[in-house]
Length: 257
Ligand code: PGA
Image 1 (cartoon, helix red, strand yellow):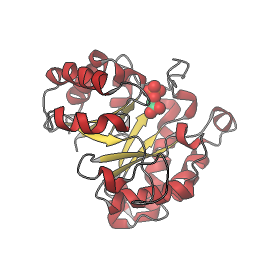
Image 2: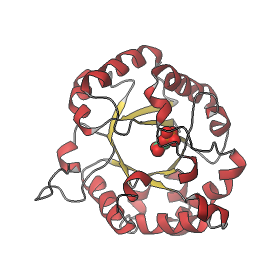
Image 3: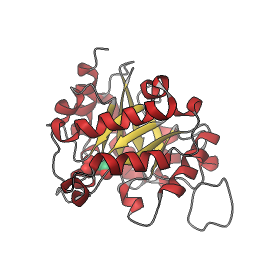
């Protein structure tokens, strides 16, 4: 299976800066069947990037979608509107959960993505306090079960889960702690086995599982060497085209499946 490497730009780069970064990044990417690269820019960048990018090298995704296709929701953008431009949508990122998104809403967004032919990347992860109380797997499994509440066995094969412990995310301030493979292995296994319990072995095998949280060009190999994951979700380091290109390159080399 191709490794999935996703760049979460968060609220950075206007359209001119977005095009500049992609123009520098693309020559460094060798199109390969072993790596799929997705950029999640701010929504204002999606249309200009759609016209600019080399689609053999990059795909686009949204950082958020609304759960309905249209209506009186000031400031929101729906999956139905983005259909045709994006292949992926990030759903339930912890920075959006912190603004009040709950698992019920996230489940409806996952359904909206599927309805519109868009692959969900559902983010789950525990905070530091929960980790210190040895609740990581429980918290993450509860989130996962609630977030997939509307997903059928057929649909789960098209879902991507991103495990991003909150204590490891940099939030742009470089303060995230770099998790070691041993810090995260048990939770990653709990995620896969929960999907298998809910949907059978085929569901668990089909679902792609990413790790994210302060991943950078220096430590990406440690995660890429783990059997438990199918790719990476990269925030801060994806804003540096050289670093992000090295992560893509490392993923290509590491994936000998
Ligand atoms: P980070 O962000 O790589 O900057 O920690 C990851 C994310 O929040 O998706």
